[in-house]
Amino acid sequence: MGRIKAGGAFLIPKLKRVGQFFGAQGLTMVSNLLYGFLCVRLLAIPDYAMYVVVFGFLGSLGVFMDTGISGCVIPLVGDQVNDKQLVADYVASLRQLSTRIFLFMAPVAAILYPLFVHNRGWSWQVVTVMVLVLLFSVWFSQIGAAYGTVLIMRRDLTRWYRDQMISSLGTLALLILFWKMHWLTAFTAILINVSGILFIGVSYYLRVRHILGVTGAGSKEKRKAIVHLALPNFPSVIFYALQGQIPLFLITLFGATTGVASVGALGRLGQGFNLFSQMNPLLIVPYFAKLAKEKVLSHYLVAVGAACGVSLAAVALAHFYPGIFLWVLGHKYYGLGHAVVLIMIGSAIRYLSGVVWVINTARKFIYWWSNISTIVLTILVQVLFIFWKRDLSTVDSVLVFNIVSAAASLVICILCGVYGFIFGPRVMEEH
Image (cartoon, rainbow, N blue to C red; front, side, top):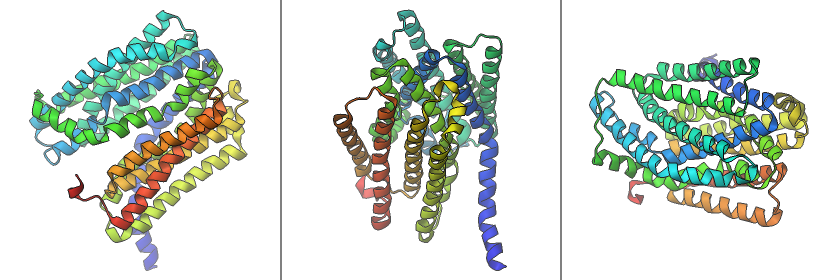
């Protein structure tokens, strides 16, 4: 009886936090997934290919625009979160940095995107509108990231979650409305999604102005502090900005329009892991950061084992019942049964890497060699694959490329964890 009570005392608070997470985030994420799957089903293949390319490029452009600087405000402010002027000054400094990066990246994106899609057969007018949509979206994404950081810092999570939910449900409602009115095209689907980004950016900005009540003043000192803190992560951030979209980039450059749409549609299936990945920063990191040293190994193995269980279940479901996934995608993609398994394997490996990486980070198992090794090993594996496979114009070859790339990252994450348990966290003298 005592063991049962002890087990309940251990599990109940954690299950409660998990339940709160799924309650707060679940509806938003399900709505986002539903929006994506409806686009897959309702848009014609050429239209969905256009939609996929725009938001795939936007994903990488957004990471390049931020390069980790938004997340630096919280540790720099530290325990002075009640100093509203300090918070406002850091946000103003962050916005100055973001503006400078945008002024540099905007012309680069305006040149690279047309080159990236030059073999798609789209008119220059269409490509020009896409470029404008990309720049507009990434600008407001940065606003949302900057001011959303303040809401998290100030523990105004109710507003943070609420606006995410309104944006998600609102865009879903608009998508259904446009479909019912026969107005749904690639451009309307893109613009509806952009309206959600705009809403979050503006809403977070207005909320932060209200709760701070002061005008921030950017300074060279604070800009320098943000850059100094973010600088060690620049190589890995840039690397992962490209890695996450490589399958889409390859099929866009070398494949047919049907292949582009197929990779984009399959990628939606892999996003099912996002619901679990969102638990990493909100639940797993805080838990392992304060866990007693003697308990870390056993809890580490339990957490990784649970992640492996989720991954294996998803891959097994895709292997034995691919028809479920193909039904979600719609009849246009019924020939992708084998590819469903490949996308789930790649997504499962990336999910596992994420879990191991955040636990390593929480326990300060962070070493200079790990980032360098990940980049070098991943590039080496990719080069060898290209020389071996050569043909990157098919959906299957691109998805296998994604698997071997993800596996290289997972290997380094595991080695980093083993090294951390043997030699301990990185000490200050290594800085």
